[in-house]
Amino acid sequence: MASSDPDALMLKADKQTKLSLTRWSADWRSATELYERAAIGYRLAKNYEKAKEGFEKASKGQEMLSSPWDAAKHMESAASLAKELRKWNEVADFYRRASELYSECGRSQPASDALMKGARVLEEVVPEEAIKLYTDACAILEEDGKEQMAFDLYRAATSVYIKLDKFTDAAATLLRWGLAADKCNATNSQCKAYLSAIIVYLYLHDIRQAEKCYNDCSQVDAFLRSDQNRCATKLLSAYAEGDVEEIKRIAQSSTITHLDHVIIRLARKLPTGEVTALENDTSKEQEEPLDENDLT
Image (cartoon, rainbow, N blue to C red; front, side, top):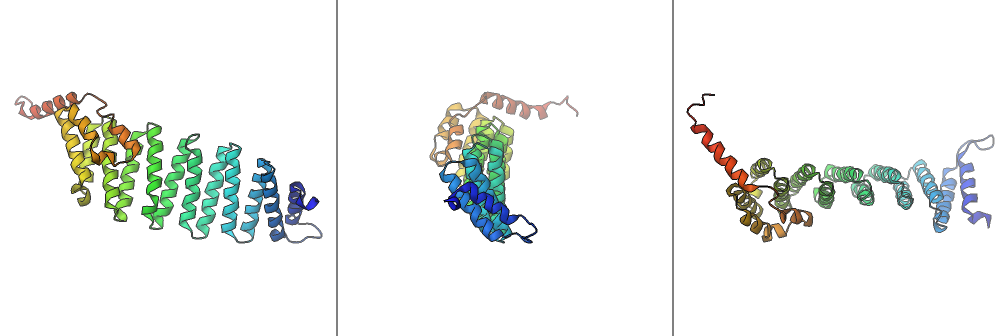
């Protein structure tokens, strides 16, 4: 019966890894098997702290046995238990380590997925760390030429930024998404991302930045000829004319309805500021060059 007791298994495994007068080298193969059995036993007994420790040691054992794939799997198990224990720093650290181990295997998708799992756990409790994990997960896929696999990660990061009221960061993420889409010829996703970024700036009532974003994105031929571009053109024209009803009408259009839900919700709240002020400012700017007394 002692052989199935997790405490006894852990103790025996620890002895297998320690050198002594009678043991000149660690027996990591035997120790790792014992750590795995102990971790499973602790988990079944809902002793999550000890189970987490067991999987950490089993992961280390698999590393010593030159098996990074199995080491990564155990590290993910440890991360899952850290979640149950609400140890958020460990959740991030363990999923990051799992990602590194998958990368050692040359497997970018599982490496990215590990970071994504950590980000999803942390979205509500440590959103800033979740964003870092999503961003790093995107980078792993893009470095491997798998930009299209990163779209959901960009979507998730944008959503977290918007929840944090970090709208400028959200717009920047959408523009990076558009660039990633361009690299894999995902024209529809690219155009949606660009229109979404323009809407985010309009939600901030930063009309100047929205126009700059529109002009920059319109340098891309695919966007210039798209329905999303035509929608953005109409939207900015409505702002320039101070036409609140037209802005609201465009926000209900099918082009915007096909964007992500977080962007639709922002669009439905437009305009968020006084649009007639823009019209007056524009008129003032047009009059200024006609001032013959202004010699500057």
